[in-house]
Image (cartoon, rainbow over all chains, first blue to last red; front, side, top):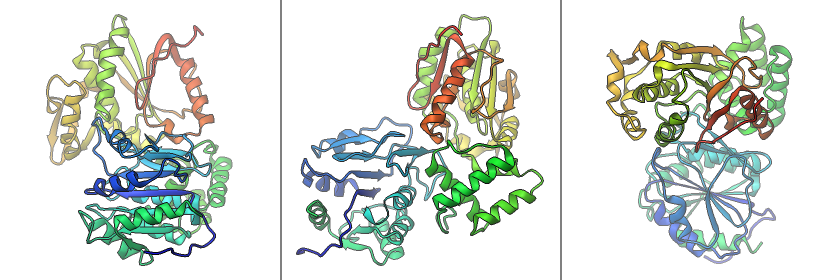
Length: 196
Length: 261
């Protein structure tokens, strides 16, 4: 892929949206991150409600970075990977803490990727990177556009590689400036972010 | 189409301007609500009304015959469901109810009862644990439209049928359909479930010094408050609890034994 020229802005938060098939992309992604990867990551996965979930444990098995469910009022910290809790929308406050909402389903989902993307875009603006992975609905597509509009970056898993291509395709449609990448390329570019 | 995200998201300055207006006009202080949700809800209201400027919303609220109620009814998040987090109800039945069951009268406050699903879930749980007959239940919410819905005990039947599994996981001993009748598209819950329930409008920012409860439930309301307001509200709850009363919040039950005052 070669080195790309980045502008002076640095990425302060990475938000990842995924649904069906997304975990197959998340595993190599998290596994490749070094233990000193300093940019916090927030992952919004469409999840079942009302069931005990082992998602945090599963993701923790991929990485030495600290994985946890996001808690309301918790400040976002370097070295952490946060997962949006089931049956809540995950918002971000100006002081970089999390907020929860039990608002209506958006794109049939709660947590909704769109909700978190838009919320993050308002706070982090050009210092935000969003990654859209495999999934079976268009959640994330509108939020990705908001992120571009506030100056952030959007990467999308190559629809040809994604297990379910609907989510990546939807984002590529709303957000033509989004960059289409294989998971390996996403990994490589993400590692490159820290060198800035 | 997504009404939440189609138009411009209001800025912090616009939000502050609106909250200040609402405070002075309606004596409603939303400054200690979590800002991200406030912005989101106001943006949604403006999109629904097809407005692009906060000043337009102010004019609408000024002209409305009951702008405060209109605003509250649109602003608050009211989404709720029967037996949300079923393990919470199971835990309540197993761990808390036995501790308050011996009393002649059990006073319970469901703070932020929204459209009533939580009250019904609680009533069903109490009924199946043979406690409902000696309970006095207070259901409160800041949203009067939601209180009206609560009073009607009527919901889309599809939503209630979807809750059948949650009912079982909450420890339901019978069948959820035992408690309602189907009329057209609606599920109408038995009046007997609400015999001991009083529904009243209330703003949690203000303490209730008149009642002492054995159990206060406040689930998924505090998430919309800043930490400062959460602390005030918890203090208000503490004042309302009996010496050995319990406060139950979302994501786990908090065992709370306040002092004797």
